[in-house]
Image 1: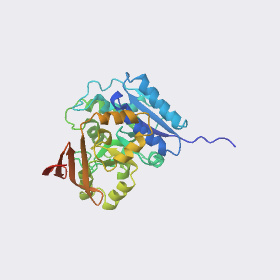
Image 2: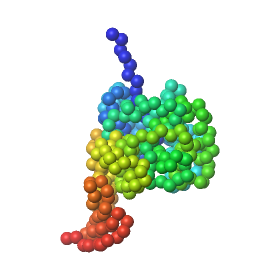
Image 3: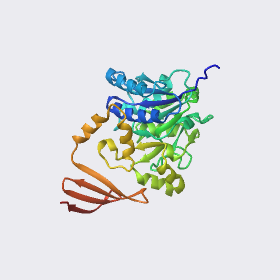
Length: 321
């Protein structure tokens, strides 16, 4: 019987040297849950160190040699683009259209601050038709794009229809718009504006934006997601996106232990712990309603404890023994 080659799941990451270890944790969580081969493509600066390339490559191959990782050097198409408080790296995901091998028609894109909690084969295999991108609605934004009410998506998790994007030549439009100063979140705003009418939506479990409960609350209040959908995503997230209160920075997060679980599987675990040991002795803990809705933030520094309603409104400060 002839061997049947299983089509791999294509997944992309974009990061620089400062984000290399963080990307490594996300990559480890991805391959840990993968039921079939994963081809990983990483867009990095041309001067991205040989040592980090080697460390990530060894990590992937030692875990399971059926997975492949390829590094793609970023081009210079966005060197003159507006970055605001970010770096040119926010535009690396656009470069996938130019840098990926010609045979790649579709790919999942993940931010480095994500953790994968399940197999992404179903997400990758979804039929996108003529849609350009797929993503999760972001209830915390108020933007004029896209025209679909409450249709604005977060760009930290995407499925990109590379074949259709290439056909439409929208890459040149992205380059042109990146020179504009009108966008608060340049890459994300540009995608929502230029892909208007050709965005496919997936459930909140595929980009569970942990650490900003108010955003999820607004999404429910606006009717973007039902309470059951949000509860299900909270209980069984497929991809956790640590947009705020990142556990690697020592911040309290209801799902922080999940990130640390995968960090411990990487060669970077001790480096993360060492960084935490150098931070001031500050802890943050949330009091949650229904184990989901953040009510009160408790901040402990040295021998003082501060309580903040919704994490913003100061309530009381006390000394601890």
